[in-house]
Every structure is written in C-alpha cells, then in structure tokens.
Length: 379
Image 1 (cartoon, rainbow, N blue to C red):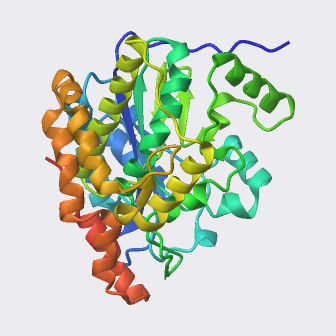
Image 2: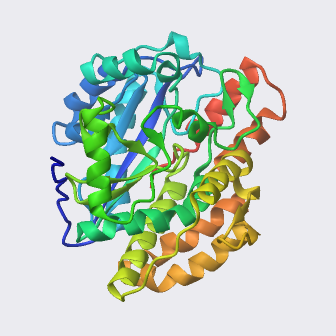
C-alpha cells in the first residue's frame, strides 16, 4: 500500500533562506574544520541567535538560516542580524566567512566530517563521490497554499533554472584548477544518487508513488534525502529552490531571493487563474542546466519545445519586466531590479577569474579567496 505524503500547506507565500559559508583561515586562506568552535562562540555571544546557525556535513561549513519571513527585506534583515554575530565569533578565531560554490585550492581529502549518523551513512553509500562534496550553496523556501500546486510550479520553475544558476555561479575553480565552468558545484552535486534535476511529475499521487518506491528499495529513509535542485519541503509547506551556488555578496543574494520569491508567487497566481503552466522537455532542461553551469551569463539557453534559443541575460531582462507587478505587490521591487546589477558588475565566477588572471597557483588562489571574503559586506 502506498502511504500518503502529507504537505503542510502555507497560508501565505512566506519565505526562508539558508546561506552556506565555508570557514577559511585568515592567514593561509585555506579551509579550516573549526565549525564547532564557531558555534560555541555564537552561543556565548547570543543564545537567541544560536539556533539560526547550523552545522553541515563538513566541519569547515556553517549554515545561516532565517525564520519564516514575509518578504525579501525581512529575510535579509534576519540574515544580517545573525551574520553580525557569526562574523564577530569568526573574527575572534582569525577565521573569515567564504561565500562561494567551491574553494579554489582546498583538497577534499583533508576535510573532516561532522559527527552525525546521517552523514556517515551518506559517505558509506556514495564513497568517493560523497567525499568530493566540497561545495556550498544557497536554498530559498517559498510557501505554497496547496499541495496540488507544488509539482506544476516546480516543473515550470525549471524554465528559469539557467537564469538562477548563471546569476549565482561562483565556483569556477576546484582542487587547484580552473575547471572552465562557471558553476562546478552544480555538476559536482548531481553525482549523488538522489540529487540533480527533479522529475517532472504532474500529480501528487505520482510523487507519492516515487517516494514509496524510493523507500521500499532502500534508496532513501526520509524525504529530506531527496536532494533535488528544486524540491517540495513537505514539513514546511514550501518549495525549496536549491539551484544557486553559494552567494558572495549580500546584495547579490538579496536580488536572487527577490527573484525566486517573485517567480513562485507569479506561477502560483497563474495556476489560480486557471492557466496550465509552461514546461520544457526534460532533455532541454538538462541541456540548459549544463549550459548555465558551463557558460554562466554567456549561456545561450533553449526557450521552448520548438528549440528557440536566446542569450540568458536577454531573456532575463524580459522576465524581470514580467515580474515587476508581482515584486510591487510583494514589496521587493527595488531588490528585483538589482538582479540587473549582477551582469553589469560581473558575477562572482567572473570576478574570481579576473583576480586569478589565468594563473593557477596557490598564491594567486589565496588572493581569490580573500577577494571573495572581502565581498561579504553587511548593511
């Protein structure tokens, strides 16, 4: 018998943000496995803030999370408040917060795992690929008021997958080499057996059957082990967008959070109006992901099943125009307009390459790390 999968619907399109940071030594610019020490420092500074700072699989990583927020401004104010405390604790340790999808020269086999049975099981199962997950990202949750909207919205959001990845791409280097990709993280993470692009289910019953099969065959034990790039977060009543690389600046994150919030609310409203949301064939979605990971803001993306193509930044301009009324209603018009600043000022992957200047050595890559940590300016 297939058990139902409950979705705890959200009455409003609230948002929540999860921002992962790597910890780097201020002198060497290398990763340091000192998250436990940082957590102690945060707790000493503020018992109230401490629950919003989480551990991750590696001890070189901390995740800063918001509460349930009404809009982008509230979410960003929440993050700024928490990060002020986290940065103070990190400063006392001689550690910087590194916001990018990958570290330029750190070695995966030198990193320490967080003591957690869940992570132990992941590594035991995935072995070499699991150990390679020296990557960081940003996750944005948006509340949805009915489970039957969730899967159509997820499938339609895949049309904007390359836009989100290109804007956030911040992982051009890995293990001491320039990979030639704007987002190495996107390519790395999909190697895990339950990660990558979501299946384009139309009915909730299809998702329930999928979960049943996954659990019956031992692929997952819990829903949170479905690590899709966009997934239902059933216990929260949200769609969780996990497309983005780790973000390097507060302003860039603010803009992308506003874009994601507007996209979900826009698609939700179109469903309410009786519209059937547009989708792309899965093979086009897969190709668009690769193109955005490879070429970033220079990606030429496939727009529809008729194989029309367009530069992602040109398509983005039209998308922002469509979303402006939604942003006005959500109170994030300024933040949405700031999306256009990312191509103008260059994305993180482009700035990192400019610092490296085509030279691949540890000294140059230390400069890259310091440029990224220096980008984290709080309001």
